[in-house]
Length: 178
Image (cartoon, rainbow, N blue to C red; front, side):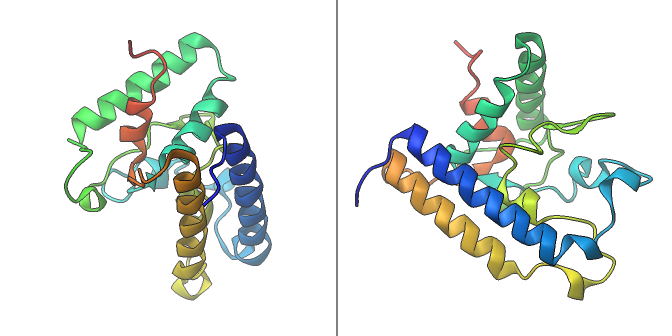
């Protein structure tokens, strides 16, 4: 398998996720609640009993690149929030992390998702508030995109295919940890 540089992998990831986001938007989101008019903005992202977003290292790096565009002070606040989330919800790098839930540290009141336009993880692209279960995008769509992301991750970093909770990866890649 031909290795990819991180820069090339991030380009491929961005293209892949943009296509996926457009597909979900055009085929499913019109049946979902509009986040802009939601009476409890961010409730789905901050619901610690619901959120369980797992990402690969490559997606974590994409998130970091998006956060790099913010001021250093703002970035430190976000990474601190990720660290606090890891501690508060006892998130681990081992064990059944898919059973763990948490509030997303990338959501900010009055702003929304800090990586919405770039770097947004695939599970977050799939998610929206649908009134009817029949309106939801089929799970196999997310599985397919995640499988492709996993292959990109493997081509970039080798066999390290660890899917971890988003706050754990943010804590691991925190550029302010020395």
